[in-house]
Length: 220
Image (tube, rainbow, N blue to C red):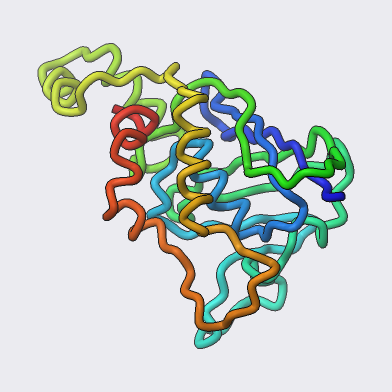
């Protein structure tokens, strides 16, 4: 029997709300959770991330760097080790420069006999553009693209192409999740082979895995 966590994630400080609901195993690490979030939200995994729960930060730790005593390794922290209860919330930050803050809420814990892949259930609205400067800058940029008021904004809108801030394709997201799980990017708890290499999103992009996703889910 394995427990699965059903989460709701919402992007802070952006309207209309960008949110998703999805499910992952309690045996996945916070790094795995980060990668699932990247897919379901539509980010491009180009920047650093960190989680915060109960005043403790979890992120990727370089052993050669001096890190805060409050920073724990997301890759070595399994979800069940957070001792989450239903309705508990914690933070996820992506792109520490732009500061995209998300709120993760555990909606439900279910116990199932079969092993299930990560899956998205629902969601609304498209994620912002990468590297646009954060929530406030994105809101201004979105307004300029959707309702250009001068020649510069009209040219920018034409350059960016069609942008639908309400776009979200649940079927497409789940196809991506299934494909990348088959690429074994999630940790395999039964595999102790230290020679195995972690699968990098950049490698998957080079293989063309994200081509359709980039065109549709990611902004334009």
